[in-house]
Amino acid sequence: MEKLDRDVVIVGAGATGLTAAARLREAGWSVVVVEARDRVGGRLLTDEIDGQMFEVGGQWVSPDQTALLETLDELGLRTYPRYRGGESVYVGRDGDARRFTGDIFPASERTQGEIERLIGILDPLVAQIDVAAPWDHPSATQFDHVSFDAWLREQSDDAEARDNIALFIADAMLTKPAHAFSLLQALLMAASAGSFSNLVDADFILDRRVVGGLQQVPLLLAESLDPGDLRLSQPVRTIEWSDTGATVHTDTLSVSARHVIVAVPPNLYSRIDYSPPLPRLRQQMQQHQSLGLVIKVHATYATPFWRAAGLSGTAFSPYQVVHEAYDNSNYGEERGTLVGFVSDEKADALFRLPAAERKAAILASLASYYGPEALEPAVYYESDWAAEEWTQGAYAASFDLGGLTRYGALQLQPVGAMRFGSSDLAAEGYQHVDGAIRVGRRLAAEVIDASTSS
Ligand code: FDA
Image 1 (cartoon, rainbow, N blue to C red):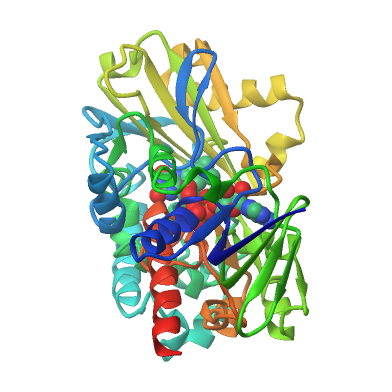
Image 2: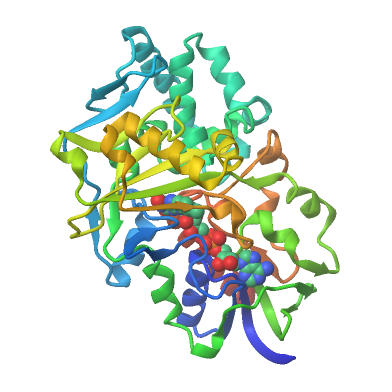
């Protein structure tokens, strides 16, 4: 058993853990980062599949994500805009594909009016939410006890309007059905992106990508560490902790430190044994937070054929297996790539099918937006994060009904020498890389403050 001594041990080499590590190193602290996988990046992975570069995990950057934009700048990474020339496509309840421009789908006049009315109710509610403490809203308990789906049913009798509003939070963000999370969780999701209208505006929320891939962020952050201070393929099994320090154990390594940062998603906290056990409400809390489920589908074609047909590649439908899809062609490539997403219960259903049938169902859905040429990609790949032992879902974690008000504040508190954090616990940038960077910075600052004040 190899033994190490450091000021801080960080569990998890995702964007959160590596941001914290880089900040602590800059402040002169000794750190070691212990990572279960044989690579850094966690939910960021830029990979080559059959000769084609794909962003298997996170990829988009929006203009409000200033922590991420600053980091990209510091690391010398360049961004480029998502292709968005031409018209978008919406497939309605009747199954017909209709072209449109702007944010509001071309449903009937009444449904369009209802969508705009619901956005008009949601935006002011979202503006009242403090992203750092949504549980402090005067109506937090009431909002946390009603599902987003039930609340939408109270607001409108127009099913197509409700389905479209739900899509932006349920299918597209939390990747859980709208009956499985609360109105408060939905408001937090929107508030963390600035407003509900921002979520509806694909040109805002999915604005830019990083030339060469977003995984370069963790890869370059890791370069700031001494090679011996990044330990890959070392799942942390046990943390022995007290108020003054901790020892973190993997199968072959023990690291003693004054502080521990557990930078893993909350659904994986219980993969680690704690000695002594975590306080009772922390043990309870981690049973109320779970990751959503989404299949990210990549399909590359000889050319971006949809552009020639006057289409932007942007497509939506609550009634399609692929509920949203975009032009995801890589910077400077002649080939065209579409990316599509299959969420929550639709993903459950597709995962029950053999791989070939799943692929056929997904491509048929793409064809309903872009025509029959979509059926024959040169390269096809499904990102399946639910099958990854060290993630177990996508994109990120959210609470079940009532969980945010019961445990939201508690999740941010240290436990002895341990602090927990990941993008799943972010305020601004919640569930996004921007949030991971903000949480990494906050945890590093808290560790430094704790030592100066003790
Ligand atoms: P992350 O999960 O990345 O890192 C945690 C690390 O801990 C992992 O490396 C894991 O292996 C490790 N670990 C876990 N248990 C361990 C143990 N016991 N011992 C040691 N190590 C352990 N965001 C965005 O901004 N724009 C986008 O477009 C998207 N799109 C998107 C698509 C898909 C398919 C996914 C899966 C995710 C996104 N995201 C995104 C979300 C974004 O990728 C995510 O929020 C951050 O990368 C999370 O970074 P963290 O470091 O917080 O966790």
